[in-house]
Length: 315
Image 1 (tube, rainbow, N blue to C red):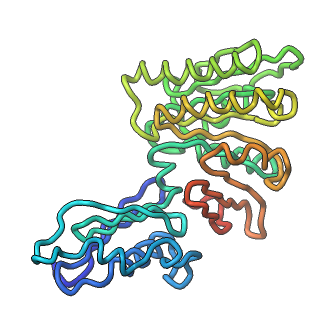
Image 2: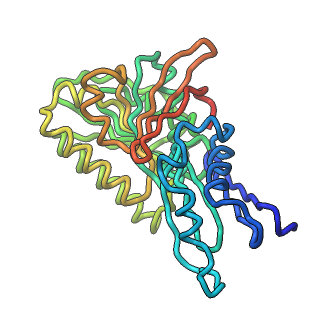
């Protein structure tokens, strides 16, 4: 390999690219230049198309000076700095390695809790939740239902390719709820009826997730996929003081197991209800039906970045 060239290694996580670049030992370009190029390549844009300038987040000259050789000529061998730009985390190490990863990729890789919202047809919401439940891979999939037909969970688990051993349904039985026969499924998933109040439902969710982790003797990051459908009766019927603790308990259980949680709220993102709870989530996935079909847009909390609209069947 030519030592004067950057090397690029790519790995894919759920279709999202992770890019790694190395500056050559001699005659290397500025670290800031490599960061911008790596982020742009990961995002699929050109460097001028990045929504944030590197100068807005870090001084490129200071970055190079931080990892420059010592005055006696000895190279620095330890230390690193991490910052965010264009929805990505960029980590620069003392050995001249620049590694970037999108927040979207990190959430899918290590887990997080997502709010799925938008005024779209039911089938679009179904497709989105199936994708977040994972249509490939050895996942443990749990669907918690509030004011939804059990058949909805069966259909999603079937489409996600869940097995009987790896598919769980928690069906909340509110007193005023009328039940509907479940849609037949070829797989006998583990279905649990849950009674009581919202706190009881949260406790049942946490117990189920932690029991799965115990039975599997530990889950790998991203292996657990959890879907709550729907938050609409929660935000409509329950006291606002109960909603945040309920979500917090669910979040803690999912995050402790490095799982990916999806919470369906079929309302416009700009509504007051969504605005009130959106900051609690790691990201919001907004859905719409565009001219070319169903589309999604992600609002990433940590890096304060919003993606462009892209097709639902991408990433």
